[in-house]
Length: 481
Image (tube, rainbow, N blue to C red):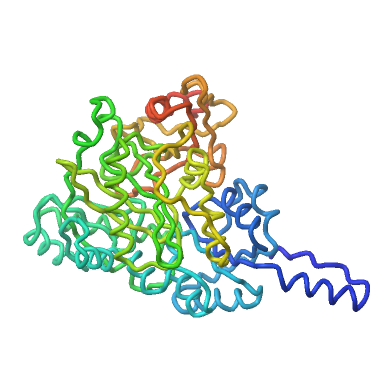
């Protein structure tokens, strides 16, 4: 445990003065779990708003710790006992009361629901427990959207192999079998016929078991691993969206809308574009600014608003993924009651000047927050978060298993003049680690590291992202065993 340093008292009068000062200090409890915004980016910003106390439900990262540990007034590590369900909620509530927290903040997908339940019971601002459940359980999420007319693919909840075979008969293949509480494309399997059902179900089940080792599990809902769904795969396209043929090829057929819900009102902040996913649906990047014309971004904004409003969220960050379809139509993939993972928040700040972490903390503390009147569509420069996967941009796995030796790898040589690249220490394996083989069923678990990339403009940025993705294996050759 890291202890908070107290004031040195020299008499009763000093003690009274210190107590009065502390009564006006706002405090926030940050509950740490796997995934979410990196601590080295988020925690200094949280501490700038309030006295910061950390409750760690997953092991704390060592990479980048020098950037965030000094920001913490206290740190309590409770991950050894693996608290879950109501025990976890009680732990959060007990610790929040102990430190006198004015807000509870969870940036991990897997702690959103537990944090929302605890905040609600404490009478603090949060997403709302019912809304947080709808934003976590994709079955409830899609039922809410279907009720409100939000465009989505047809789906069916399933629990076992027999259900998957039934779903193949009821829906139009190809289908996607996925965990209802999952994220990062982990465990997603394509099912093209009833004959595929046994293998797909077995592979998904095995992938979910491996999630336990990584701590990528829902901490509040005990039966989450058994909750699955099958949905029709959305036929996306960039042709009716990106006018330029080269842009149609280089950008993915989906985007995300980053935003914040404040006292029930949704504030979309910006659109982040993507490179195409690699099979089956593993994400590579989040880029800003989006190069789509403003009228098209406004259409995306309105669909995102309908999707978020349907969930009834109260106070939280949001990350809404939307598929671009033919003839200018759209289909919503999912909405999360938290910010996008990796360093998306840093990308947004770099390009649009919006510090989403600071804005959300201010909202949770009941302080005034200046939200844009409309979603921003133009920024300055360009930036992206890029996943380091052992595969090229087409999804072809690496043929070697090189060793990561930073001092022997010149990543800058892959970039255009004026561009920059840096690894995110918290999200990158340590030097000396061997890059493993690509596993299609592992989704985001394949990610060996994360890069933050900047460029002078979006065109240069997308060129650089492909250069890094396709040239990284070769660039690591000098450090191979």
